[in-house]
Length: 240
Length: 322
Image (tube, rainbow over all chains, first blue to last red; front, side, top):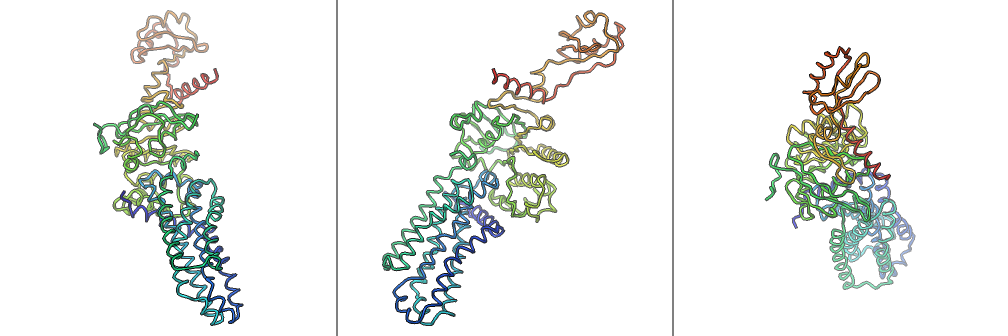
């Protein structure tokens, strides 16, 4: 199957323009990361140097992987049902765009801002910790393996969340319902990263590689599964 | 062997044979057959819920037919040909379906890329010129009136230079000036050889623009040129008005060439059923003069497409009540 990069780019560019000018999407994408960053910052700033020993054995930064797991629900949840509601889906589906191209374009348009926001918030968090936390606490938190894990797992988790939310969006009749269900469906990812962050699941290099490989596989399968079940007729007529 | 180029002027642009679509127990349309030649403007009329939009969506590969076959722009209507068909056609749905947060140019740019048109900037300029919206290219679609949005949707449909253009109620909700502009544009497209499939409720629009029309009411009720349909459904008549009633109308009208019969219409009016007005009218005039009648008018009765439409749709409704 030959996919057209021009058509995928057209979908991505259009989506990004729409998100940028959609106040509710921008606001929701800004608020969710704040929930994940304010409370840890307050806690970290309040920690005395003596807490650094305990911190060195935990993986608190991974808690923030909740951002790429939840933020895509805002954009991906809107992606299909939002178009349906404003009547723009039918004209797009009458063009030669393949369903794989359409879905990949939608997914990338959701992935870019989600990972961008996650990385930006993460970088801001690290900068604040480096500048304002006790130096011993900062040294205990800012460890390269965790930073690398954050960088690696952010797009993988976001992509998985995106496919789930796109699937929900394609079957919903209301944007808000799609976004809320999308967040709910993305929660297992947040639970796993939180359990790792608080040492309930012991982290090893093998586990990290295994999880990364599993997520990569799930992301590929998510795209295939979504493409296989994407039904123009159901989307246009609303038949179940 | 069918042509796969679907080129303009090379055989039929659309061939539909026994096409049906059901949603569960509900019949959207059934056993629809017709053929549309390249460059033809074809009107598709019918009441609400008759299946017009579903037919357009089916021919546009958005919906799979339940049964029947069709060739669209030279390709058999089948899932595997969906992309090839969509490359060659364009559908303007009833609702413009524009991205309201994007500008006119951004909307068109997106669709130019989806159709992979060469030299998109030039195509967008041409499409905007065609709908007289060049000066509004940078305006947000959300700030446009309904009529202007409809014109943007038309520009979008023209971007890919389609072989078959489906227009679903293109003038719905527009003011008379905007309607005239759309009509002029359809005329221009006809001159360029674009095949147009026009669904409309506006019967005078169909009569003015379409080479042929079909009336659908779940099943195809009739198809033909508007004047053919009038002749099929209604007998030709000549209406005669005199200042005072004729003393013996039977003697005046009986035996005239091409006159099948007559009935009185009011106190000094007569309606003659004729087979050929051109033969009957001169003979009738002579007979009236010979009879010393004071003739007020002799006119050929004009049945409109609306009369044809109402006759068919109302007879369907009566049959449904029985």
